[in-house]
Image (tube, rainbow over all chains, first blue to last red; front, top):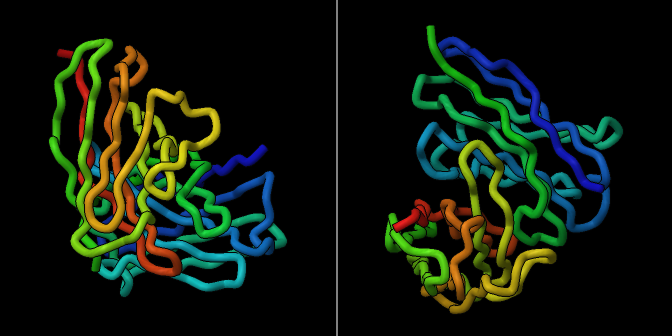
Amino acid sequence: QITLKESGPTLVKPTQTLTLTCTFSGFSLSTSGVGVGWIRQPPGKALEWLALIYWDDDKRYSPSLRSRLTITKDTSKNQVVLTMTNMDPVDTATYFCAHSDDYDPFDYWGQGTLVTVSS
Amino acid sequence: DIQMTQSPSTLSASVGDRVTITCRASQSISSWLAWYQQKPGKAPKLLIYKASSLESGVPSRFSGSGSGTEFTLTISSLQPDDFATYYCQQYNSYSLLTFGPGTKVEIK
């Protein structure tokens, strides 16, 4: 059974760096073709893909946010970490992590975590 | 970058109606297109992948078609559980991912 869960701060101040952790079970990020991605959704708005890391440490980033994002994995801990620098109130959103197998779309998602950016 | 558009943005329909949502890509994505359903406060649920393949456990009233730049999601007979927002997503292999802006299906 595949599960994912996001964790991190619920409130960050403008200009701070956000660090989110996705802890998963039921699969290994060392298995060929597996990936874990991050997607966010501002309140009442659409989904926005942020980043994706694959089993072989290949990393992909949204072009519009690439300069602010870093995605890493810790295979031994079954975790993927996303950092986003220079947070702004427009970054207020629910942040989801999700599983991809064999380079297919996201078939399992975490419940999401709401991050509010405010002073 | 590949841009995705969806139409309509909102759709009002009744239980039993046949519903069609269109998704267009700014350049050809072959069949690398997925559809998700999202309900308020919940994570998206994968319905369709590779444009027309039904995800395991998804009711057969959902179907997808298209290739290249134009795709459709059809619900053959709308059920009460289907009122939600639907997103398309392109996933050109080894490339970057993009979601569409979403289509809200509401009760007429």
